[in-house]
Structures are given as structure tokens and as C-alpha cells.
Amino acid sequence: MPKDKSENQKEFTFGTCDYSYTSPELRRISPTTSVLNVVIPFEAALKLNLAIDECVRKINRYKKSTKEGKRAALNLAIFLNQGRVSVNETKLKK
Image (cartoon, rainbow, N blue to C red; front, side, top):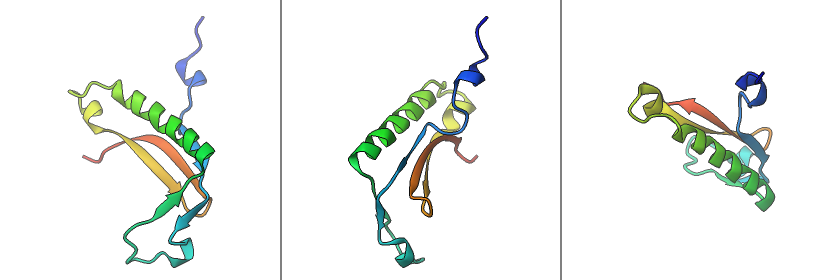
């Protein structure tokens, strides 16, 4: 008998990776900072690329004519204190 899909699939994230540093440095970020550069080493960038690709492929399976399909989105979460980037599926706000 086939196992339930949820037992074989990730539930929260499509993948994570570490980043090396930010520019400006975290301690120098202020409300006037308009750009935050996140520097990711090549090997970690490959992981990030795969995670983004997996998420986009899943989102692409939704019918774009439905509410669920129109609201499907990718969330790129940057954990500044942990030096990690996470790729998750989310929904756009109504």
C-alpha cells in the first residue's frame, strides 16, 4: 500500500544554505539602509538554486485560474543572526 504523501515530503522548507557575510555589516544596518547584499559562496549558491527551482516547480503546478494558483508565491527568508537563507512556499496576501 502506498505511503501517505506527507510522510515522504518536506513540510516546511525546500532547502537552506549558509551565507558568508552581508554588506553593510549587520551592526551597521539602519532604517536608512536601502540595500542589503548577502554574499553566498558557490557551493551554498548551488543549494540555494536547487531549493528555489524546486519551489518554483511546485508553485507552477497550481492552476493559475484558481485563487490558490494566483496567490502562490516563494518566500526567501534570510536569518540574519544565523547566517542562513531558507526557501519556502507561501501565499500572497489578499
